[in-house]
Length: 359
Image (cartoon, rainbow, N blue to C red; front, side, top):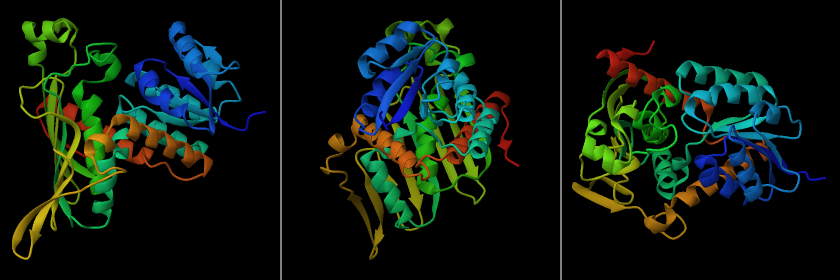
């Protein structure tokens, strides 16, 4: 009998097939034991590619959760179902990795956290950009105090023309929003993690539905303007309880020269940092300004060390180790909840035209 951790995958679409499964399959201590998807063919395809002769396939995820042999569940479904599935999985005695964002609604994210605490099961959210080479190096620099008090930051998630015109990405009802909740969530998570600051005081947000409605742009991008029910860009200012300010920019389509997803700019009392063309630290020493590139990772080459696969491989390895060694996940649900609460407040501010204050 195998003593490996048995993992059940709920949702067998692109995020499961391209992110979770290829890297979980490399970990010797786990077995991909069950697959569930409302489209049976997707579940069977995943099982054939990554399962074993004993792999179970379900159309109803509740049947997977009822399987007592499953130890861990990965939730890779649309945003609107994250909370329901995660809560049921925790109640069923499973540890859970849920894809980002934590939930479509902040209130549901609160319920997820409360359930994890009550059941004693581990819960983490799929913010894989924390595990990039530059992110790991910058996090160490921040924790060492090399930047001092970080009081101003920018969270960048900007695509010039990068609309995911597939699946349910353009469906506001299922996803909750567009680039802000899809990729802005990564940039904000990364920024708050670097600052170690999760207490917002107020936000002001704006969102736009501009380039998505231009017929020529839509045709070239592969979508219909009428199908585009979410924003194509959104921006916000977040003021934290300690006075620190974070500017957040997110877009799938924006007329801008420089684009980059999950990039961070930090400004502290001792120095600053940015990720735009490698990892750079700036500051003043002996009366002179300096800019220093930080070599990182295994090779010191950002083009090699920051490839997406390496960050995901580390993300999955660290998550499994947190279960095997009974320690806190790197991405804590309390942190992911703060991100969801800020994103929801930004959407509210954009809709009402007013600042939103946290009690």
